[in-house]
Amino acid sequence: MPTKNYKSLLFASDLFSINTYINITKNKLILPFYHTVLKSNKSHLSEIGYYREYNLFKEDILFFTKNYQSIPISKIDFANYNSFHLTFDDGLSEVYSEVAPLLFDNKIHATFFINSDFIDNKNLFYRHKISIILTQLKKSKTDLDKISNYLNVETQQIYSKINSIKDVFLIDAIAEILRIDFSQYLFDFKPYLTTLELKDLMKMGFQIGNHSKNHPNFKNIDIFEQKMQVFDCNLFLKNELNIIDYYFSFPFGDQNIENDFFQSMYSELNILNSFGVSGMKNDGFSKHKHRILMENNELSAIQIIKYEYLYFMCKSFFGKNYIKRN
Ligand SMILES: [Zn+2]
View 1 (cartoon, rainbow, N blue to C red):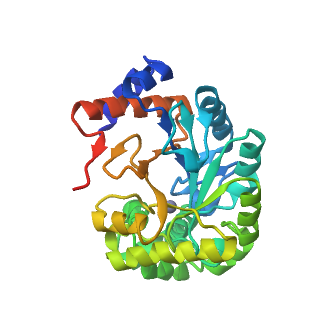
View 2 (cartoon, rainbow, N blue to C red):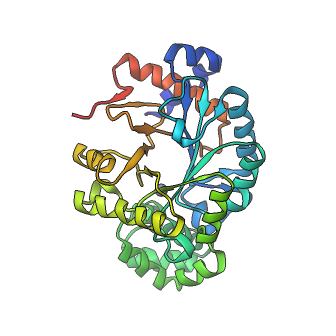
């Protein structure tokens, strides 16, 4: 959406109260979603912006608990009062050190969606690698020139160019030129949750969910690989954590995913609910839920949520608040 429309809508959204929005839209359940919450910058996240600032997150919690009641993930299909359920993707370590204690003290439920390949800091997600590379390029003009030559791209375009790379081999090649050692980074900074921490989170009452094996974009892989990605992560959840209730959040969202995959997911892969990232939206598959990204650090929770309600109302006017699955 163009920035001008976005700003007008954001401004207009403040005219109504949350209760008015709930009454008009009948959307009593909201599903806010995060990757992680940070007190200070971290190289693997700072350049891609997948985080909420800690103080904003504390304010978010106050807003949610004041207007909605926290419910466990098992109740989201049956919520008939104002309710919310928090989810966090990518299995980042701060959800254990910062988020879980805060939520536990406030009796707030949450689901942490993990990638089985990254747990115990075995591998780095390629988007996190990109953030580490960009952090280094910002610090060193020499490195910037080196990579600009290597990729044959003007230095001004280098950030957007690197940010758009999806080829993991190219990312690793750039890191090698910059002498970035990702294994050392994993060892030094331990960006992801460990199996022991996952067990602790479960003891605290939190749910652990499936976010695929290694976070590919599902629209770029075939249905066989899609199923394997979910199956492998389910297997990890079962073998390591004795989980039998499976929930799945799509890495990079659910755009252009075939109905056949959705159907297999709910039948043979035993997924109880799946989650996308399209904001406030209804879906042809009733088990598939859309979540609201809360990581715009320029905005408060009330601004983000009110905007989503008004945007939902605008979309419903044009019949676009519902994803048909033919
Ligand atoms: Zn993710």
